Image 1 (cartoon, rainbow, N blue to C red):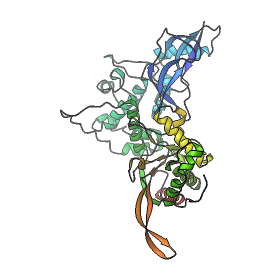
Image 2: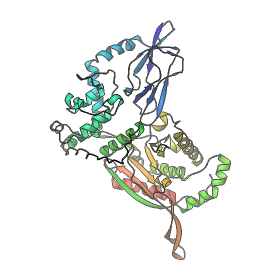
Image 3: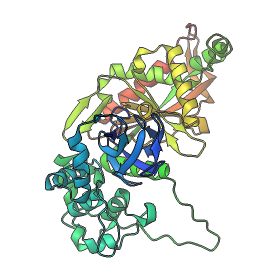
Image 4: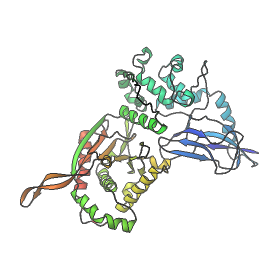
Length: 451
């Protein structure tokens, strides 16, 4: 007999952790190679972890709702092989960690929490009254001076009322009237920017959320897991980045006329419908090459200038939730290639068939609010990016057109572009010039081009 370790797999660029949402096998169950052992979830995509070999699940090292780092051992499988397929030291150390984590591990957990990175819950400690608190929750509580008594009084949103990371962060954020909050009440985003911590500590504590009254005819709907994650991500983005939005109205008449002219032939030749999204992405890519400092991220007091242009495209799901698949190296595609990428990702997003890698690694995001008939919007930045653009509905309008015979009134196709950007690193000049350049590329579209 031999024992092998089931490892939390790497699920794409920048994906550092996943949440166990359901164990499909129990200890003692027989497992076949490639058979799914558990379901996991990243920010927006659910996946399954298969067994690497035939065997028996003899030890689960984590519970459902635990957050696990990529590369960590999540279970032990006993196989028929004569030698262990993985180093024995980590396997033997895992139970010991489960019983009593080493001080170094605890210090590392606190360090990761301070940097805004969730740690894995290796143990299941309980308070004197039997209430469960993961090491991550305990680390955050220690960092924010939250007493055990306060923890025990929290209402958890996790399984069996378990207090989750989101619960403790929300409590810290909203306990402005608590005396203990005064010395250490920085917003969660301040943990990702140590240099900004002093300013965050001196800022007024946020006011507690106003209580919500519930009427006799009201319906209470629990947020699903994805909606909770989206909510957390949006609030975090607002705390992290001072948002500024610039607007430009673009005359896209040439583009609209060209698409109307070629869409039938395009679908017949390429087997794909051409929408306005790939045409806008094409203009975005050109503008990013002109203004590469839009294609950056912030890490504390340093700026990371991205070498690749990876365009995220926000897509609405049938459930009403939002997902952002990413076109990697978008500048390597021509218009046909972009169209096929857009259609494929949008189709598989609706069918819940995207892999974690396909929703990670974006460097700039486009959201097409015009799909819903909206003329403009003020989008929230998709962290850790520093900018996002919303494309509004294309509407016919009377406009002044310059001709050799003088100014004339004509019917033109107009579209608003809204550009939200992080004012920490993108000033109004850069943010405004960028959205103007995108509009210029759309307005200068060649009505006679081939596809």
